[in-house]
Image 1 (cartoon, rainbow, N blue to C red):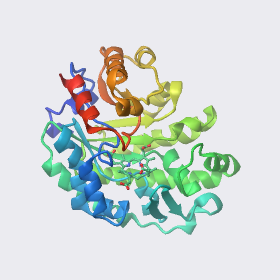
Image 2 (cartoon, rainbow, N blue to C red):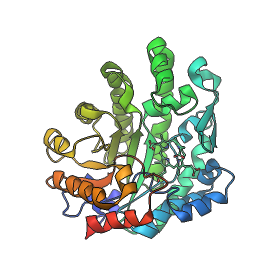
Image 3 (cartoon, rainbow, N blue to C red):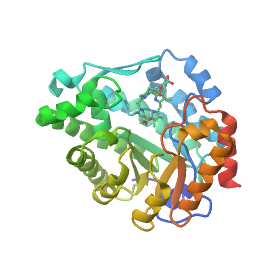
Length: 345
Ligand code: CP3
C-alpha cells in the first residue's frame, strides 16, 4: 500500500488530498538533470544514461541532488519513461545529440517479435527503497511512468519525433496491432508503478508528453481510454494512491481527460491560460503548473510577471507550482533559487 499516510506533514500530499495551501508546494519536471553541475559530474562517470538508471545508488543520488540543493516539496524518481519499452524487450540507447533510439522499431513488426524482460526494472525498485529511507517526512516521493500513448510513439517510431506521424498513421492503418502494443504497455506499467509504490513512492505522475497531436476521436481512443484503464487497474491494488496526469498539449480536452481518467490532479503545460483553467476545471480540483520553461531560462521581469500571474490565477484552488514541461539544461541555477524565493517568501 502507498505510504502517504506516514507523511501527514508533506505539503504536496496534503494538496493532492484536496487541501488548499497558502504557499503552493513546488517541484520541477526534470529537476534531476543536466542543469545541475552535480548531475553532470555523476553522469560523466557513467558510459551512458541507462547505466546510471541501473546503478541504484547513483540513481538514488541523482534523485536526491535537487532536494539537497533546493529543498523542493517533491523528489521525483530518477529513471525514464523508456524503461518500459526496454523491459518489453526493445534495445535502448541514448545517443548524444540525437536522443533515444529503440530497436527494433515496431512500425513494421508485430509485438510478438520481442521477448519481455521485466527484470530490467528491478534496479529501479531498489533506487526507490534507497531514496524512500533518506527523504524527510515533508518531502513527497513521486514515482512516474509514461502514459501508454507517449510510450507507444517511441516504440513504434524507434525514436522521438516532432509530430508522431509514423505512430498516428499506424494507429489508423492497423489499430489491431497498435492496440496490442498499447495493452502490453498498460499491463507492464501497472506492474511497474505497483513496484514503485510497494518500494516506497507516495504518489505517481503519468507523463503524456505527446498527447497533443491526436485528432479528437484518436485522443479519446489512445489517450483517455488507456489512461483510464491504467488508473483503474492501479487503484484496484492501491485505492488511495494520488495520480497526477500530465497530458501535454491536450488543450481544452483536459476537461474530458479529468472526468474520464479519474486522475487526482492535472499537470498543465505552459500553453494553457491559467485563468481559463481556473474557471473551467472542476472546483477544488488540484492543478499543477504551468510556468514556461523558457521564461525560467530567461529570468528577469518576464519571469517575475509569469510567476505572479500563475499564483494569482490559482489562488483559490489547490495548486502545485511547477513548469509547463521539463526544465531546460541551460537554465541558470540562480533563476531556480529566485523562483523558490518568490514562491516561498
Ligand atoms: O524529472 C526528473 O528529474 C526525473 C527523471 C526523468 C527523466 N526523464 C530523466 C532523463 C523523467 C521524469 C523523464 C521523463 C521523460 N523521458 C519524458 C516525459 C517528460 C518530457 O520531458 O516530455 C520523455 C519524453 C522522456 C524520453 C527521453 N529521455 C528523451 C527524449 C531523452 C533525451 C533528451 C534529453 O532530454 O536528453 C531522455 C533522456 C533523459 N531522461 C535524461 C534525463 C536526465 C538526459 C540524459 C542524459 O543525462 O544523458
